[in-house]
Length: 120
Image 1: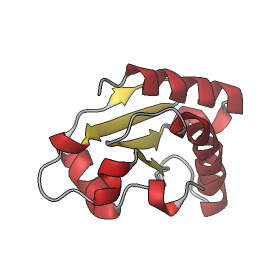
Image 2 (image 1 turned 180 degrees about the vertical axis):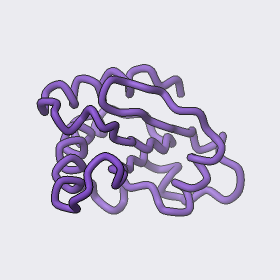
Image 3 (image 1 turned 90 degrees about the vertical axis):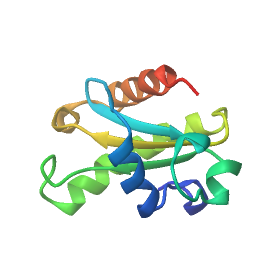
Protein backbone atom coordinates (compact mmCIF):
# COMPACT_ATOMS: atom_id res chain seq x y z
CA UNK A 1 0.00 0.00 0.00
CA UNK A 2 1.01 3.56 -0.57
CA UNK A 3 1.49 5.72 2.52
CA UNK A 4 -1.64 7.64 3.47
CA UNK A 5 0.19 10.94 2.99
CA UNK A 6 0.76 10.03 -0.69
CA UNK A 7 -2.78 8.83 -1.52
CA UNK A 8 -5.48 10.81 -3.33
CA UNK A 9 -8.51 11.51 -1.13
CA UNK A 10 -11.98 10.31 -2.14
CA UNK A 11 -13.17 13.87 -2.72
CA UNK A 12 -10.21 14.58 -4.98
CA UNK A 13 -10.73 11.28 -6.89
CA UNK A 14 -14.31 12.27 -7.73
CA UNK A 15 -13.19 15.72 -8.82
CA UNK A 16 -10.36 14.44 -11.03
CA UNK A 17 -12.51 11.73 -12.63
CA UNK A 18 -15.25 14.21 -13.49
CA UNK A 19 -12.94 16.87 -14.96
CA UNK A 20 -10.07 15.07 -16.72
CA UNK A 21 -9.54 12.79 -19.71
CA UNK A 22 -7.79 9.42 -19.42
CA UNK A 23 -4.47 8.27 -20.87
CA UNK A 24 -4.75 4.62 -21.94
CA UNK A 25 -2.16 1.86 -21.85
CA UNK A 26 -2.36 -1.89 -22.43
CA UNK A 27 -3.18 -2.86 -18.84
CA UNK A 28 -3.91 0.46 -17.12
CA UNK A 29 -5.31 3.89 -17.73
CA UNK A 30 -4.67 6.99 -15.71
CA UNK A 31 -6.29 10.30 -14.98
CA UNK A 32 -4.23 13.09 -13.51
CA UNK A 33 -4.36 16.74 -12.56
CA UNK A 34 -1.80 19.28 -11.49
CA UNK A 35 -2.56 21.09 -8.23
CA UNK A 36 -3.35 24.36 -10.02
CA UNK A 37 -5.70 22.73 -12.52
CA UNK A 38 -8.19 21.30 -10.03
CA UNK A 39 -11.18 23.46 -9.22
CA UNK A 40 -12.10 24.12 -5.63
CA UNK A 41 -10.02 23.66 -2.51
CA UNK A 42 -6.81 21.73 -2.81
CA UNK A 43 -5.47 19.76 0.10
CA UNK A 44 -2.11 21.00 1.31
CA UNK A 45 -0.70 17.51 0.90
CA UNK A 46 -1.54 17.65 -2.82
CA UNK A 47 0.73 20.65 -3.23
CA UNK A 48 3.58 19.34 -1.03
CA UNK A 49 3.73 15.88 -2.57
CA UNK A 50 2.63 14.05 -5.65
CA UNK A 51 -0.39 11.89 -4.84
CA UNK A 52 -1.32 8.50 -6.26
CA UNK A 53 -4.32 6.22 -6.02
CA UNK A 54 -4.98 2.80 -7.55
CA UNK A 55 -8.52 1.70 -8.37
CA UNK A 56 -9.43 -1.86 -9.36
CA UNK A 57 -13.11 -2.06 -10.37
CA UNK A 58 -15.29 -5.06 -9.56
CA UNK A 59 -15.80 -5.53 -13.28
CA UNK A 60 -12.10 -6.45 -13.52
CA UNK A 61 -11.94 -8.86 -10.57
CA UNK A 62 -14.96 -10.05 -8.60
CA UNK A 63 -13.13 -11.18 -5.46
CA UNK A 64 -11.66 -8.64 -3.07
CA UNK A 65 -8.55 -10.81 -2.71
CA UNK A 66 -7.91 -10.60 -6.45
CA UNK A 67 -8.55 -6.84 -6.53
CA UNK A 68 -6.17 -6.29 -3.65
CA UNK A 69 -3.49 -8.45 -5.31
CA UNK A 70 -3.65 -6.32 -8.47
CA UNK A 71 -3.62 -3.15 -6.40
CA UNK A 72 -0.48 -4.26 -4.51
CA UNK A 73 1.35 -5.05 -7.77
CA UNK A 74 0.67 -1.61 -9.17
CA UNK A 75 1.32 0.19 -5.89
CA UNK A 76 4.75 -1.39 -5.70
CA UNK A 77 5.62 -0.13 -9.18
CA UNK A 78 4.36 3.35 -8.23
CA UNK A 79 6.41 3.38 -5.05
CA UNK A 80 9.59 3.38 -7.12
CA UNK A 81 8.27 6.19 -9.33
CA UNK A 82 7.26 8.40 -6.38
CA UNK A 83 10.86 9.12 -5.44
CA UNK A 84 11.66 11.16 -8.53
CA UNK A 85 8.16 12.41 -9.37
CA UNK A 86 7.51 16.19 -9.43
CA UNK A 87 5.43 17.67 -6.61
CA UNK A 88 1.87 18.91 -6.98
CA UNK A 89 0.40 16.19 -9.24
CA UNK A 90 -2.49 13.87 -8.34
CA UNK A 91 -2.55 10.63 -10.36
CA UNK A 92 -5.31 8.01 -10.33
CA UNK A 93 -4.46 4.63 -11.86
CA UNK A 94 -7.33 2.44 -13.06
CA UNK A 95 -6.78 -1.23 -13.86
CA UNK A 96 -8.09 -2.76 -17.08
CA UNK A 97 -9.39 -6.32 -17.41
CA UNK A 98 -6.28 -7.37 -19.37
CA UNK A 99 -4.08 -6.82 -16.28
CA UNK A 100 -5.37 -10.02 -14.63
CA UNK A 101 -3.30 -12.24 -16.93
CA UNK A 102 -0.27 -9.94 -17.25
CA UNK A 103 3.08 -10.42 -15.56
CA UNK A 104 4.28 -7.95 -12.92
CA UNK A 105 7.03 -6.64 -15.17
CA UNK A 106 4.56 -5.95 -17.98
CA UNK A 107 2.21 -4.06 -15.66
CA UNK A 108 5.08 -2.03 -14.20
CA UNK A 109 6.39 -1.21 -17.68
CA UNK A 110 2.93 -0.09 -18.83
CA UNK A 111 2.49 2.04 -15.72
CA UNK A 112 5.87 3.71 -16.11
CA UNK A 113 5.24 4.46 -19.79
CA UNK A 114 1.92 6.11 -18.88
CA UNK A 115 3.53 8.13 -16.10
CA UNK A 116 6.21 9.33 -18.52
CA UNK A 117 3.48 10.62 -20.88
CA UNK A 118 2.12 12.96 -18.22
CA UNK A 119 2.88 16.59 -18.93
CA UNK A 120 3.05 18.69 -15.78
